[in-house]
Length: 522
Ligand code: 6LW
Image (cartoon, rainbow, N blue to C red):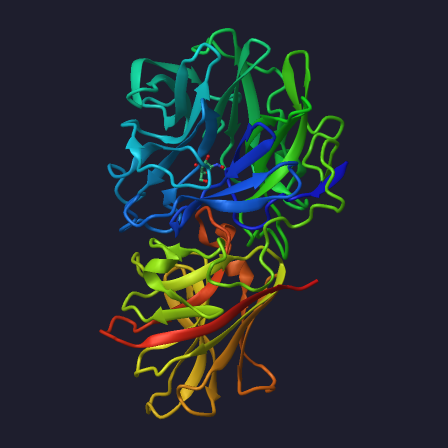
C-alpha cells in the first residue's frame, strides 16, 4: 500500500480528466493561454505521476492570437477507445465568442503527436465523450440555457458522434440542468456506465467557494436523468473560507485494475487570508458505491489530506508529484510560454535560455518574451542569472504572472543616463503600473546579474545580487494577496519565469538567462 498526499498535483492543474488503459492511468488538465497546452501525465499506481507530453505542442495546431488571459484551453476530457485516445476541449476567446469553440483531437500515443483539431461546431464549454458498450460514442457538454429561469443556468447537452467522420449526428438531447435550482454553472459533465446504469457527474455552483459535485443516473444514455437525492455528493461549500481546501469540484472518475474507484477533482488551498495563489490544483479522492450511487471519500465526506492507495506499492509517500526542484533545464516539460511555445520565444543555451527581447510586454495581449514555471509551493525561491547588453528602455528579469492586468516584474534596465544598470520592481495591478522599488547596480552593463523571487506565503521578496558571493539586496516585497484570482479574477494560479522586453521599440538585443532554479523552501 502507498499513500498519496493531497494535492496530487500542486500548482495550477485545474479541471483534471483521467482515463485508464490496461495498468496505466493518464491525466490531463487545463492550461488556458499557456503553451504547450494540456499536459499529459502518466501513472501506474495513482501515486507517482510523470509528465509524458502535451496535447497541444505544435505551432499552428491552435491559434492563440488575441486570446486574453484566462481564455484559451478550458476543461478537457480524455478517453480511450479501440486503440485511440480521444481528447475533447474548448478554445475560448472571451473577447470574440464566435472564435474557437469545441474540438476533438486524437492520438495513438498519449505522449503525442496529437492530431490537428476537428471542430465540433457546437457552442458552450466542458465537452466530454462517452463510449458505450454497444460501440456508439456520445459527446456532451455544458452551455448557457437560452431562456434561463435563473442567473447562469446551464444545461448539459448530448449528441452522438460518428466515429468514422468525427462529426456530431442525430438529434440533440438536453440531459440535466444540475441538482440545485438556482445554482450557477452545472458544468464539467462526464458520462459513465456502471453495472448497466448511465451516470452523469457534473460540477455546479461555479469554480469558487460554492463549487460542488453532483450526480444523476438514467437507464438510457439519452435520459431521463434522475438526480441523487443526496446531492451534492461532495462539496466544501458549507465549511466556510477558513479550511485547508475550498472550491472542491469538477471531478472525473476512474476504476483501477483491482476494481476500486477513484475521483480526481480540483480544489484550492487558501493561505495568508482567503487567497489561493497556487490556483486550482488536482486532488485524489477514493470513491465507493452504495445503493447504486457513488460515495466520495466514504466515512470522511471531504477531501482527505492523505489517501491510501491499497494496490500501489511505491515505498514512500507520494508527496508533491510533478514538482520542479533545482535548476530547471530548457528540456523540462514544465516550461511554458504565453500564446506561443517556449521554442517560439526562446532557444535553449546550456542550462538556460537565449531570450531575444520582443517589443511586446507582459501587459499586452500578445506574445511576450516570457518562459515560466507554475508556482507550486507556498515557499519557494526562484533564481535566475541574466545578462544582456541592454539599450535604453530595454529590460530583462523575472516576472510573477497572473495575467496581462496583474503581474509583478523584477527587471534589470539601464539608468536614465544610460551609463549604468538598475534593478527595478514594477507591479501592474488591475492594469495600472507602479514602481515598488529600485536598486542601482555596480559593474559593467553586460555583467551577469542574479535575480531572485523569494516567496514566503504572501510575501514575494524580489532580490538582486551582482558579482560572485555578494549578498542579495531586496529591491521590494510585493503583496501576493493582490495577485491571485480572488484579487485579480480569472481561473489561473501564478507562474514565475524569465522575461525580457524592449517595451515597444524595435530591437535586436538578446538576453541570456544563464540558468533558472526553482527551490522549494520548508
Ligand atoms: C471550466 C469549468 C470550470 O471550463 O472552470 O471548475 C472553467 N470548472 O468547468 C475553467 O477552468
